[in-house]
Image (cartoon, rainbow, N blue to C red; front, side, top):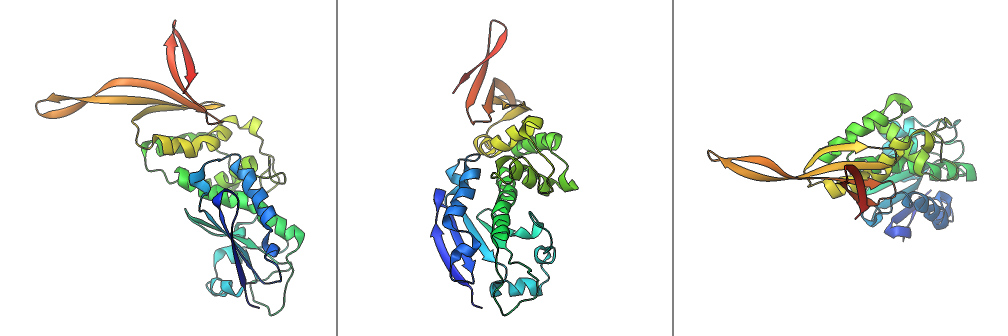
Length: 285
C-alpha cells in the first residue's frame, strides 16, 4: 500500500497534512472535522502567533512511512493497546514548536505491517481527533514556558502551576496536557481526564485561569522587571518595577523608582491597579 498525501491550509492558517491509504484523505479526519477541533481550542487560545503556520500531520498508522519507526521500537508505537478506547500516549507521535503529528489507528492495528487495508472506524477516527487537545496541551505548555522555565515570568508561572496542578499520572508533562484537554477540549473531552475522572473548572478556578493566561502573560512580560506575581481565581497579577542606577564609587546600584501592579483576567482583559482613598481599585487598559 502506498501512502497518499494531501496538504491543505485550514482555519486560522494551520497547515493540515493528511497521510492516508484509501480513496479519501477523510479517513484521517475531514477538513470540517479538523476545523471543528481547532475552533474548540482556538476559543481558549485566540492568538495568531500560536496558530498561523502551525503544521498538523494526521497519519494512518498502517502507512509504510512509519516502518522505520516500528523497526526502532519507538515507544509511542509499542505502547498502543488495541483493546483500549480513548486517549493513549501513542496518539501523539511527535511535537515541537512548529509541528504536531497525530496517529489514526485502524481497527485491530498491530505494530507489524500488513499488506491489506485495515479500516479506521468512526470511533477510532473520533478518538484520534479527541486526542489532539491533549497533544496540543504539550505544545502549549512548551511555548508558554511551563515545565521548561527560563525567564523570570516563566519561572513564576511554573511556581504557580506547581501549586495548583492536579496529579494525573504523577507526571507534570502529562498532567498539564490532560488539564488542557479537559478545560479546552471538545464536547467529548470537556470536563474529564482521559481516564474518565471529572476535572471541573469550578473545582480548579486558579488552574483554569493560569492555563488561559500563561501564553499571553509570558509573551507580554518576557522583557519586563517583575518583582512579584499573584494567582487569584479569575485573575493573574504582577508587580512591574522600574529602576534607575545610582553611581556609588563607580558601581551602578539599582534603585526602584516605579512600582505598579497590573493584572489579566481569564478573558485576557488587562488592568492597572491603584490606591484611592486607602482602597485598591483597578481600571482597564
